Image (cartoon, rainbow, N blue to C red; front, side):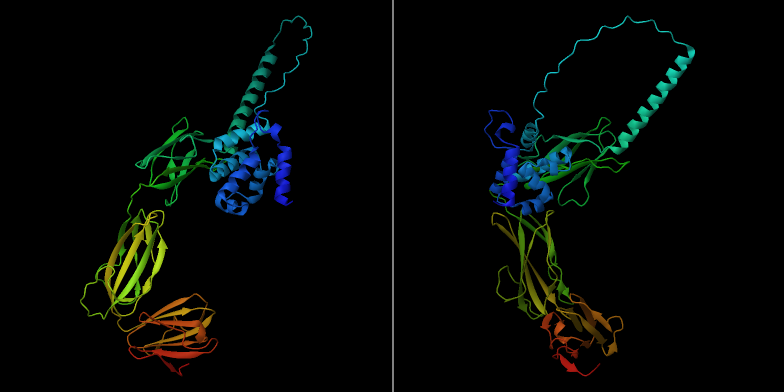
Length: 453
């Protein structure tokens, strides 16, 4: 029997059928219920730890019923709520079962009241002035310490937080819903922070004097997640748990993507091949970039999407939560190019835009990439030593961009670790690893090895 099965068996013994709730309730205990929900979801504890950000030792304690390994009742409730949402269970029902299995719902035993002793007849009280003054001083001291304790308690306790709307942590609305009003209560004087993916800074809400707060939020199709916490602005203390709300707006049966391509601009001429391609898309999961070489720069033909031509580099990337996307800058050779971007929705529908640009190099543009190991580099531009770029060791992963009017010479301490791209054309390495060599680049001539050191 594995360690996890031993722990699960121990949890069953500790929380057996007679301790799960009502005596006649045949349903599974909370530990078994959590294990079954996780196995239905098809994930292990390692995956659950990564998704929920709850340590695996705490998840294991929840699934075995060993609550002594958890930091406390408040944290246990927070862990159970977030884990239930993750497993697709009703968090309020899970918390009720947890309380029930802990015995919080059982009625207390009746107390035996002993007979009262006979009381002596009360004697009249005589208060002297000294007694009155001492009583007043004592009352003042007691009131002062009560006030001081209240202030210390106020500064030491984290703010309370409750979400009253929505009443459940995860639910689905109609597909045409675009807004929702989040509501709740907190300790007076606190600030509510609501974070959502795609929003750099959280929304900040100042509650009313009685602690009530609300915030109308925009909804988009798919899952809309909101992480809500309360913060005391004076002590910087945060609420003990962050309440998570997930509102799902279903997609329509037919929802075509839209695509806006901000870069490159149609008809632009670039002096080098580093071309940015970026834009925005809605209702799209991914975007794909394809390029086609259309011929020499003086060609006047206007391409159409899908037209023939020599294929160039292709890329695929995902659309961010805010709808934006960008590709790695394109390194293209001299000539005219058609750049096509296609956005694809989860249902397979597409939207396409094409831009025609021209690459016309002027002089020499040389990109030096250090790969596989470090290399010592020395550079001459148009016959003159380039001081800032020379006499240095560049580590693997570094890129150097050099420009000149007529020629560029590069000496590398490890030719096999030095990759060259000349005017947008990849040349790769020109020599073996660990061998120092000097190469001269002066297009349209081919690169030649020189003896310059």
